[in-house]
Image (tube, rainbow, N blue to C red; front, side, top):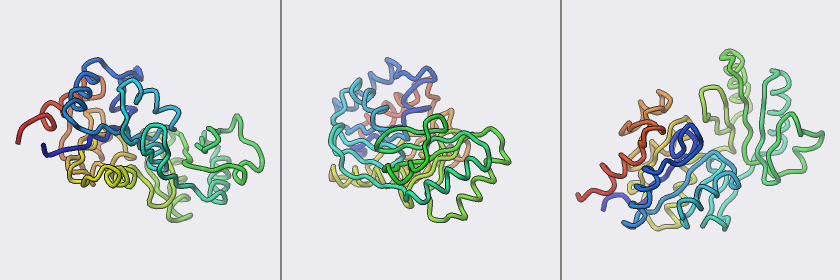
Length: 247
């Protein structure tokens, strides 16, 4: 069997627009697992938001959360954690206020936004990811330029209207590379499926990079294969046609 690891984004990929795993997709994921394929959630979500879906599928394999800032040896055992510089978090917070846009920040200690932000918070917590959301393209572009001026940050998105910032060099590709090391396999043996720019690095690095039919155009253009949408069991089709096949 050519492929040994199936790395799955969650929102817009594994999950339907109703934030559920469809019965057909779950059936084919379980078929892959029964055939000896490792299945790894690779998500921008926090650990606590991801693990219930892993439990639903019965996953005991490694997991990548917060766009690669955390890699789990198993669903309940942390392997690696990469943190943002608190001073940079302070800069990004001030930028959100200057531009008057919604922000969120994921920390080991919890999730924060303008509703629960407090003075001195950046210095007290361990920061995994920072994000902005605005449907104003010009403001989003201005924020992007400011972030690039800070330098070294990993900047992606999980929708066309947001920006997600991780520590330098940390993304889903770096996370899945660590998973490969844990499992003793190569990136060429990975099938990675996703829909947004935070999936792009791993889609490009994997042996088979797959874009969902609902994926952003830049992701579709850089994938090896474009499958059906998250509402039409695109993952199931890839398992059937590319993974559970005899070479």
